[in-house]
Length: 366
Image 1 (cartoon, rainbow, N blue to C red):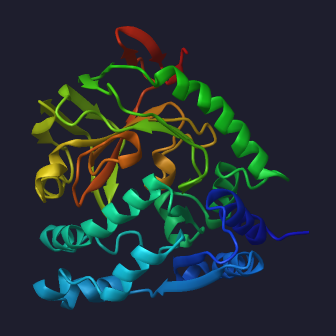
Image 2: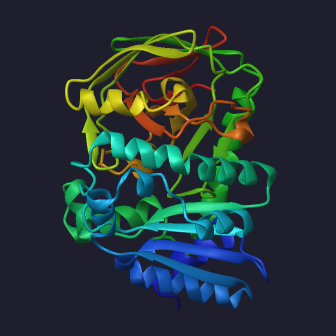
């Protein structure tokens, strides 16, 4: 019988990234995830592929941002560039020692690094869109993640396992079932020209005309549970209020209220973390435009944990991302930023597609 980590690894290798013989596979993770790293490494070897482990040490990022000069912040090493050109599968495992380790890093330093690594992000998204690269992001339960979620490590591990359906004998079958259900949602959304979102301090209209909706059922994120697209870049008009905390690189912004004109953020406020939020959306021209619109569908996730991998999937929520869009949807916005910001929709909020009510109180009507 497989251990939990072997089961987890098998899903990531066989289902999420579909590792094949002779694939070059990067396994990127913090060292704290050792049990899952080794399990993934084993599964990749069993497939006849070539695994390369890239680990990050506790304190490494803090040291970098404390001592790196501008030239070093903007440097991207040639080996990493080559990896993004050559890798077939990319498995990233989050296992933070401290989720607030970036909280006091000056925002201008974070922006410099984001801008420097933007070509790598665009390379990965572009190769994924053309089908030459598969990638997945997942998490290993740590005390830091548990603390952020206000849970014990035991409760958090159980939460993660159930959110991923790893408590089932055959989690892949469950994710395939979810995929079929979400196929119906995607079919209903494809062909939509205009979406209108209505709720507390919210009346936002955006065009998705000609854009493709994507069914997320465990391929790029694990856990998963969303359907998304990239809005037409200059289409967003109106305002939206995000009542869930927005977290990015250890920083928090609360109760963000954003107004759009011709697709661009023209006014933004936040009750907490406003300066950080504004610094992030000012990092480049594309950061003030929308790169994503999505519905969260994972009903095993109901509470905010402070971890965007889980929180953006909350059943009964939507999220919009400021910054880079996804090429596979037809999106054209480019930016060093991609910040998913979540809105609770279970409080009387509505979404209309071409003037037809399709979503109310966190539930689809199609």
